[in-house]
Image (cartoon, rainbow, N blue to C red; front, side, top):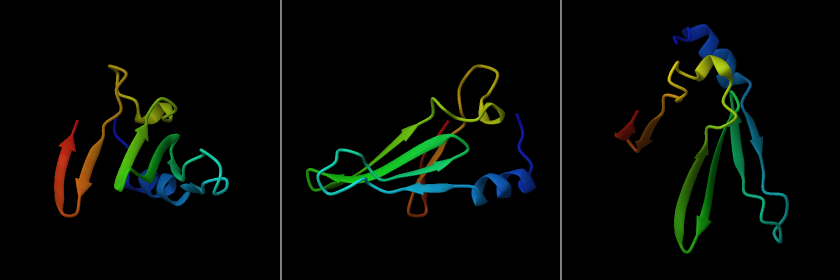
Length: 81
């Protein structure tokens, strides 16, 4: 599974922001890119980040069924798998 830099650019440019529905809703703000949904929100005074890979586009899914993921915090990579 390899995605070219031009295809990556296409996927990045097609990303969508889905805002929280309203102040009294439980819908969280989300960025969706290539079927992957990334939620960032505040809970209990902490910034929380949640990633849903279940709906990732097929071209991102490895032969073993996993989706490659890197998590950076600032300039540090804290997870790569």
